[in-house]
Length: 256
Figure 1 (cartoon, rainbow, N blue to C red):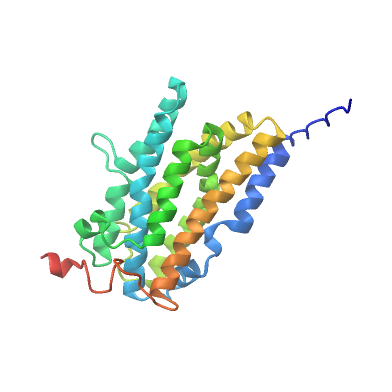
Figure 2 (figure 1 turned 90 degrees about the vertical axis):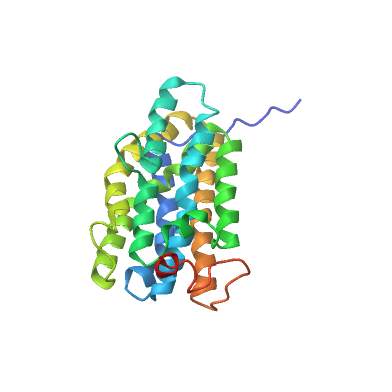
């Protein structure tokens, strides 16, 4: 009778965290050419508008993703901790949330906020990617769902670069229009600290560590694929798919 091989031991907490951070170093969407174009002032007004429209779909689905996660959590303490994420995006009594701030950005770039909120002009690939993320969080293990959120580890850098680049290069950029990004610099670190500790605590086998790392890679793919679609439709080869936003649609002067 042959003996079963011993399972691979889990990496140390420090080594596993380093593995997660390497995923961001290699795969986070701050390295996408569209962000270099946007932050460097190379986007046309319509390319900025296309980014705002498509990114709104992602922003609007984040609290839906978090609600799907909470519906599966049996631990009240975890639900209480996670609830903050929904309030950060949806707002709370007497406090506006990130979705309202994003629509203020939409208005600043000349878009009708009602048009943006309708999601009518969203690229098909954006819908597929974002909906896949919501479905992943609804169906994967709680560990994998939390691990997928850890792209926030890498977000402060891109938010800071975005604020600097937009203020430098675009006339619409000011404290009001960029409030979403400034608030995320304050909100995200608390979420990151909680999520990272949860993953490091619960990924206590090599198999669970592999699953958590794969979930984080999946989330980087979700973010990257959205920018791929945006670049293809509005930069090069500038082929807008049927049903997606066409420049000139949904502008403020049309709504007036």
